[in-house]
Length: 114
Length: 111
Image 1 (cartoon, chains in turn purple, orange):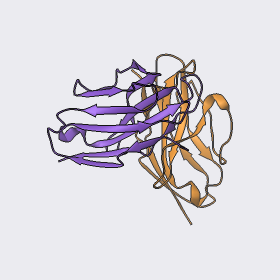
Image 2 (cartoon, helix red, strand yellow; image 1 turned 90 degrees about the vertical axis):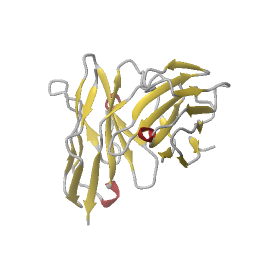
Image 3 (cartoon, chains in turn blue, green; image 1 turned 120 degrees about the vertical axis):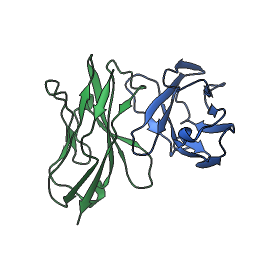
Image 4 (cartoon, chains in turn purple, brown; image 1 turned 135 degrees about the vertical axis):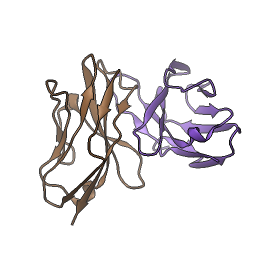
């Protein structure tokens, strides 16, 4: 595809449910990032993948959050036992590699926990 | 800890007027600074980065290490510049993955 694709674009879920958010990076991009943007805030770093491995997951807020990238392309962000405070726009970005290259962002998934 | 501060949540100017969006940062090392822009109903995109030292869409930004600032400037604002602007910081050395963003400034350019 032409850019980073995220699905779904919107997700409404009930408190306590499990959700999965998907990110399709630009083809050939080895680096992939997840950010979370709460209302009125800038994006906040969650996790970074280089290839299949999570090189830095220091931004994940707690153990309810987990992300995978099993084949080094598509990534899934998984949230267990969702809470209302998890409501935010989840952004995915990819870059050719982590060194001196532009990160291209997806449109984001707006998650609402009711 | 690294921090980016954008003191203005909203900024409104008239077309043709100069515009300056302020960004201050705190970081113990030598940072790389970026400006990202999000136009209405579009995705976040890179506008410029300080290491490139280039002008994009008439915008420039100079890194002032003494004042720890990276203000974005344009001498003559255009209506199409209306957007949300985010200043961001990462560690130097090309590792741009872990960006720290400010809260953003919504720029409105009036006709």
